[in-house]
Length: 331
Image (tube, rainbow, N blue to C red; front, side):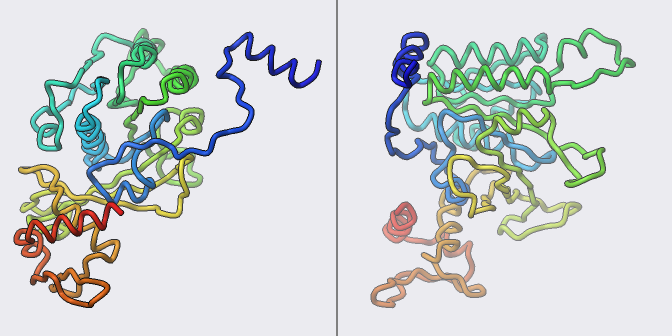
């Protein structure tokens, strides 16, 4: 058989879309997050049609970032739904609303009586409808495989959730290929690496799961006071957190930008105005020297707006100046 005959046979068996002669050059569609520093690391945001893993220690900002993404997707105004698989049973609707989530539009599923296999198959079935734009699984370690569920707590079980995850990753990838406008975020946790070699920590799910993910971010959280200054872990006047995202893997963009961060305040949630100014300082649009913060016209050298202290700069910035900075940042 010639090559054309083989390709024709593949088309007849698996559909015309299975063979493409000449690949169209087009950018990967992305969901822009409110946290602009993370968008910069990800070259525009979370990619559609891919498996994405958020990992990290406890209170590192994994679920918070997933909720930020959920709120950002809702604000797009599409007719597709957002599904939150709350395997841990810890969904905080009050905190979600502070992060911009419309709780009334969220489909929350708590698989309390499901095994890991049943939960993962349910996610595949949900993705196969093509009616969902964003799926969040919180979290992988909370899933209990059937073989573990059926045994006594004294009995030792090999593999754990790795085996069902291996099957799941293959199945859900097929659905994401069919419906490339869907984003799947799985939240994972760090575990001590008992092997004793390499990194002191690892994630659950095994190597197959890690290979299946196109983007992997590891989060770390740091306590801050009301002005944004870092605090020790034992400090009592904690007002919020700086959430730092470390890029572990990215198959959808260059990996030259490794770390992004954003701030959340526990009483007010995500402060978009502060995030814009922080990103503008990071990009050199706004200059900060000691306590002095100023926005300068790069062409004329004229100081358009300045203030002593970052908080004063943010709280008193004129709307026109803020909009100008935001548009420059978007460019």
